[in-house]
Length: 203
Length: 203
DNA sequence: CCGCTAACCGACACATCTGTCGGCTAGGGT
DNA sequence: ACCCTAGCCGACAGATGTGTCGGTTAGCGG
Image 1: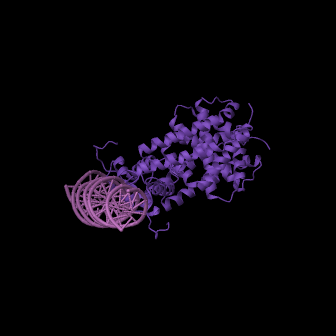
Image 2: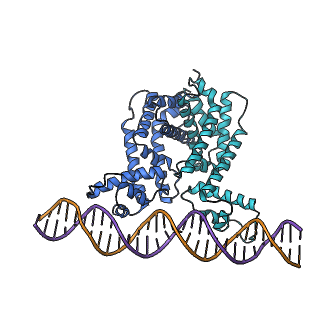
């Protein structure tokens, strides 16, 4: 996969970075149980045991990659939310930011969103924490809009509505991966039409 | 897990039914790669090799269960869609039907929706077919509503919007499983508020 | 009551995967 | 120029999982 012939040695941190980047790709594609450390090692161009020089186990490797990519997602979205503008504009820019992330880092999106039903208890716990923090962040963003349709943000139903929005948008991102020709602005427009205006609005 | 002592022999079809029912539970909980035939056999109260008397391989077993449960879902929803009433009423009853299904058959929902990123090529293909037919069915249901907001149902963006709705509703169903105290009518109301009225509607 | 089919199971062969251990050597530090 | 550490690897042990084969027996049909 990479340029093997040179066979040069890397420094620890550099090799570790190669490993996490490769692990992201493979885990995203095949899921936790579906990938072996051998898969990752081969794809990264090193012997399998090298992975153990950097991570004590397969589980810890996945966890490290998940934490890393989640931080990256948070940073990515956080840095491009429009602080000002109308509520509508703010929501539009957030949706736009998420779709941008999905486009520029498809593996990260898959790792964080597509494999939520893994069975390992410890992984489940971490994943649950990530999801909850994500839901809370979205809740904070949408609190005003939710209130404006007559639901108080602290009510449980508000959380369910936020889940609908998050999962719905990710569903669009998944669809986009299968239909990459669709221009992003059109997707944003379609999502806004549904979530902001609603299907019941006459035209 | 079951009443073992009697140790009575079952007829072929009855045993097969026990196996598929058990396989549904275990696959739904742990996913394809996460479950072994030993897990299923133990949970079903038989020796592992008995599974091979009914299915030639693990993959075929999963595929059989998926087809079966998908048929069940289609039948369930199809039989309770309100044929008459306003577009709004029709949408509400469909959402209600899906939430009812999610509540009465949680394992089936998980098997069909939560594990969409399995890696086995053949499984992927079948799963993709199931999803496409589901999207088309929803599209047929929503065609009128989609058109009424200015999007033609044959445009690709319409498909993306349907994906948003489906994935969003399933996100609510997932949330409901973690918060079972929420009464269903309230969930339906919340989903309608978002998808029908939209967040932008003043109150 | 008896035989025979179909249900059931234990044991085996083979493959794959995780994690460990000790050895080799590239290449930076001195 | 040499050392010696940090990066890299092959080989091994143990666990787990799939699929096969042949034997055993429950219990239905005659």
